[in-house]
Length: 258
Image (cartoon, rainbow, N blue to C red):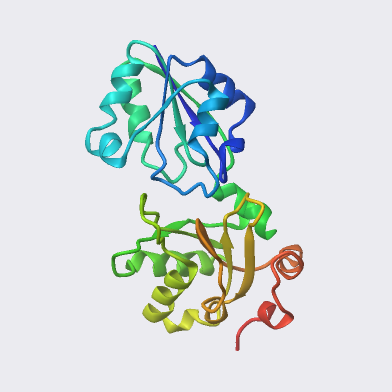
């Protein structure tokens, strides 16, 4: 039969597109996962009411350790919808599930929705083509050398670096911008004067965006997650203006550190 990956967007059940909603309503069964990202205002009951059917929530072990066996089995006999935070297959591990479907001869498609990868441009005013490789900082491990290398490689090319913060499903306390910057500046104090943008709850009504030097962002309270950081590269003049007008950067912030 078939499986449709459906993006839920960034904030709540209203982030699903009309096409995604239509596909979910047409499905024989609907599965979902909510461990790859936090949707701060998602109400599962409201989502189920909109779809008109129960959503069976799967955890990491069912999708990764078991290879998504439950979803694959269902998709072999019926039309399945699989709900994913953000835009499916971006910064998630679900590509392996789609490859398994292809090997089984089961049709699949993706209904896209907003992702932090694209939405961060609108939130900050930074231009999409000026971003280099993105990277994730793990919460309960030492800072990987690859984080500093990625920032350095992007900076050498004048590019911005999107840093995603590790999400741990089911835990009240999540990694914060303060935690991440502390890790980075402890590992490399030369990052302290670097211009960065902290973003939290992008797409929600209480979205928080602030541009400043890293050593100053540590003192900012960004509230609850999800949170991300952009380490700023070489700025186009319109990007500089956006950081000042949209993100609260000062003239001093926008000058190269001495």
